[in-house]
Length: 107
Image (cartoon, rainbow, N blue to C red; front, side):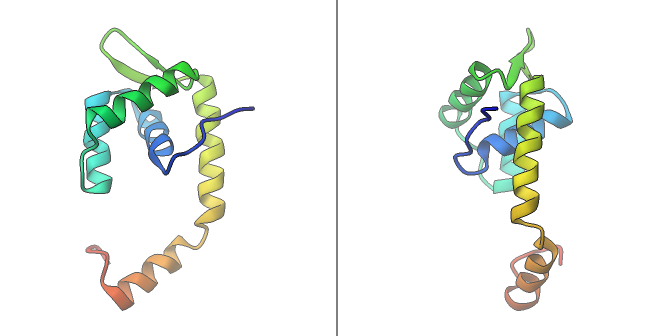
């Protein structure tokens, strides 16, 4: 099965955010800002959303809210599996950074 190829984490994050609840492009951008510290521009977010819609990963309703399709759900599962396999030791990584570099505010 073809799933969206990640160009960084943007596709993955969008799938994750929309899986939690339907969101507009502006709501997705605001949520991304919370995670990345910078709000993506409309020129970044909307072409990605359009591409994901064309790949049948997302649908959009009359209120301009995006929702995952069945293909989008499967793609998210694939991305989550890859993320978990890659970062299975994330707690150890976080504690190392917290202890030695004070990179995280909530440590």
